[in-house]
Length: 443
Ligand SMILES: Cc1cc2nc3c(=O)[nH]c(=O)nc-3n(C[C@H](O)[C@H](O)[C@H](O)COP(=O)(O)OP(=O)(O)OC[C@H]3O[C@@H](n4cnc5c(N)ncnc54)[C@H](O)[C@@H]3O)c2cc1C
Image 1 (cartoon, rainbow, N blue to C red):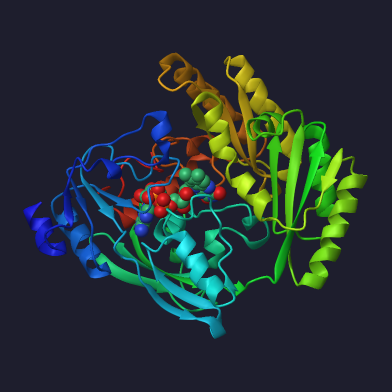
Image 2: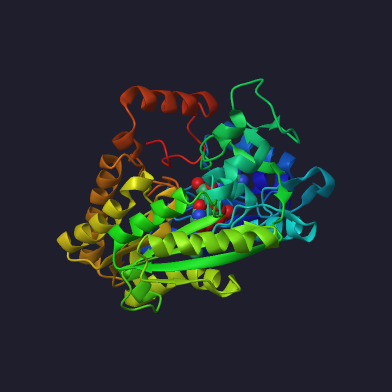
């Protein structure tokens, strides 16, 4: 602690029992860690010096953003240093005329979006906990969100990264460049690396002009099978919605829409004159596809606020949940929604799902009473079946939250041994001592 305080200054090394730094959004599953110290560097150079010290002393380093991750990625499992990037909070540059921004890792997602918006620009990545999650965490998890259907996830917006690589070197790859194929795609490699390959300290983003307006369309269906036909009708319409989210019957009931079987929530955005035309085309496409009801409110804010509250509403039903984020090919969405409920029933658990239909990404969820160990065990067994189902349907065990600690080892389900070996070789090359977020992602 004394030596680390010499690097970052007194007051910026917290005791290892600083409880806010020992858990993330996986706390509902009882995950809580133990650290030897929590270190808050005030600059990228200090972050590099902390990593160098840890590498010299064989001490594990757990990078931490806003702690909103669902996979336990930021939880220190077995001591070591939690490296919190929260003090790296500067927007280093914002060039509205060139549609670009450079922001440090600790800037919250909401601030990035707000600052862009103030200049008439859009950073389209919109994960649900944006007021708390940080840009570095978004890059490290390659975060998505509803509007990533049209715009793509974080990786699509990152043109460069400043990061600390082992054994403590501050490097820049990419930058304010729109194209760069000179080397291997290290920027892409760091996106989604969950703190296991390096510590992100700053990020160059490309932005786009913010759409003039957006309008929602909500369609309800009798069941998931009918909803699947609705989804395919939206795609066939030729309109490109910015978001296509869904809720199944259980999620709708939890969110106060008892009785409906399945709902699609679409958003269209762009110039005011075109948005109304696109909205009308979607209304027709969804009606023709057999929707029981199609609503087209004049303002989407209430709809999306309601949608953001779904996760909390589902938790409130029983007080706890095990929620996963599998993704499947679009034509298998209804299969995955139905099988989630069947898996739950086999384990005597109420189950539901909601998520990003346009990306085939389900938040498949099993409801629990907090503190009921037997139920938690059944839910974990159900989650294993869920992962197997996702892979059987041609999908992935994680569409957006990453593997972290909770899904360690699951990659072996979906990748062949040679691909896994390549994965491990990358980890060894960039983190030869295995000190960067040990035990996470690659297990
Ligand atoms: C209510 C709610 C809604 C959510 N909705 C979405 C959603 O729609 N889409 C989605 O994708 N996710 C969603 N999430 C999950 C979460 O918000 C994202 O994964 C987010 O990107 C995590 O950012 P964070 O700053 O909180 O990272 P943390 O939780 O602090 O860390 C996540 C991982 O990234 C690593 N990490 C963090 N910062 C750095 C850094 N600077 N350098 C290297 N590694 C780092 C950590 O070690 C850890 O492995 C949601 C979470 C909640 C609680």
